[in-house]
Image (tube, rainbow, N blue to C red; front, top):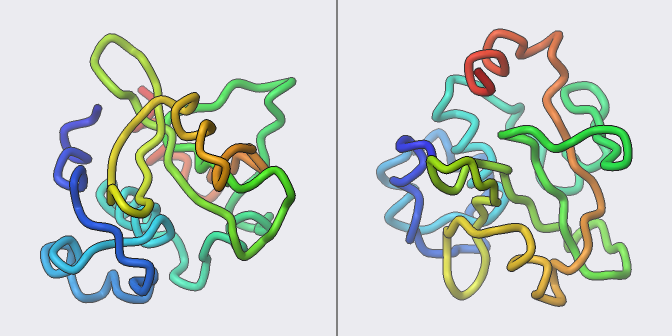
Length: 157
């Protein structure tokens, strides 16, 4: 996994903490805990990309200004794509977000996410999909290159 993301592993889950709290600073936030939405903002922020603060899980799912949807039949996920997961039956308010990252230097990929009770962890997508609350991929969202091209090139090599 990218070394910059190791700092988030083990941070407790706190469902009350929203992306608006990112203004408090990473050190204070990581002490009180993060939810999946705030974690996505913090991961991107770590690489100098500021996702608009009003974009939470449902807004990211529906957004087509900053993100585009990825069709898995035509495209493979890239590092830093956002996975919108949920139960089999789609419920917008129950979407769970995770960021696609490299798990190890051997090239294996997985998702960094924050959920109850474990807090922030990074694990293979197959493991996350075993949880009935996150058993279906409802969307994969990728930052639109026109807005963030220089960052995406840097991150994906």
